[in-house]
Amino acid sequence: MPEERTVRGEGITLDLLLWRRDGVRGRELVEAALDLNPGLADLGAVLPLGTVVFLPDPPAARSAPVPRKVVDLFG
Image 1 (cartoon, rainbow, N blue to C red):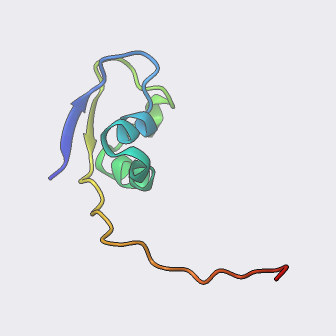
Image 2 (image 1 turned 180 degrees about the vertical axis):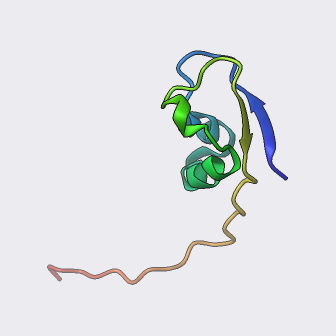
């Protein structure tokens, strides 16, 4: 269920709202947030005070990192 937030400070961007709530994983949600808020992009990069923004559900936590094969170029 989308979460409703109201911009209460100056210099707040959509990226910043998502980062404050979800950390680094919030970067994946910018497009979904713009889909939930038609016309939000027309307001500019910095959101005006009092703007109501609907934030998408946070991404699911990843269970475990996927192991990667390491290539040694000099060994």
